[in-house]
Image (cartoon, rainbow, N blue to C red; front, side, top):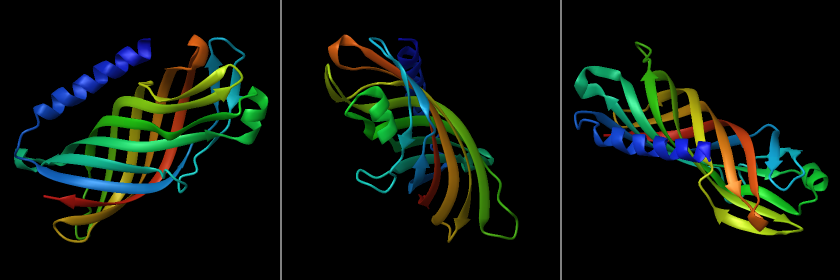
Length: 220
């Protein structure tokens, strides 16, 4: 599985890169939630038939959409506006009623997450004379979906390594003081999902999640 091999390589690169981050850095921890959606995607099933899925995000239903982020700003290296982040996002999608009717499946969702883990490069642009700090970022990593499929031939209900994901984000932070800030951002992830389902079959789809996040950060 090509995407799974790429995902493993990216995960190893994340760990290797973080291990070499110098201690002379401004560090931060962020938590966020928000509103997340996903457009339709094509579903390929190895034992057929294929179909097109409509997705609902249900961001505020249990388990909710949320994320955690650790950021290293290279302040001590003379590059205060450049940073690296490790970002975990509990994104999720549910097949809508039309999709279930079309496919004949009674249950199809990744509601315990299309869990996303990415390594990202960030660049911030403080606005002189204000406490506003716009920023942008991009990166790549892996997706680990909780695959939930119930159809006539059986049931699947487990976490799997789905494959690779790429991420882009843009937002603005507001510094309350030297330690605390709040932020609003857009974050998008494109994930290649290739997983196993019942009866020895496989399922493939590419899922784009779009989210507007609101969060808080603590720097130290």
